[in-house]
Length: 158
Image (tube, rainbow, N blue to C red; front, side, top):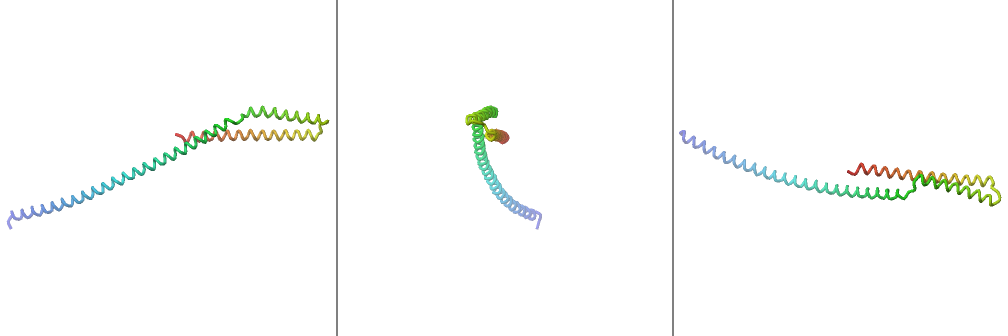
């Protein structure tokens, strides 16, 4: 073999090798394009899923906040109907005095006020005091609950 034939054979070998490599590159490119397409679809589906989940969470949160606001408003409306401590104390004292006066008046009317009747009148007055104190405590308790709900809502509502 002479140099030209050998050179020709080498060129033929390199051309075959080039076409073979070109085919492999084409196969790799097609495989990568397919993988890229699949990855792109996966990312798109994942983002859509995240968006749907976010929308559901926001809707649920909005509903929860609406319910909390309604509850807070009902507590506010309810607390507006409560008697104040000062108003209660003033009227309670007047009622206690009136009860004592009526009991003594009745005892005098009956002819005499026995020790038992006076003790009974004082016992009823003490019971009225206890009821009054309980009512004040209940009013203060409800007021504190109202304040706690307001504080909670201020922290949870953006």
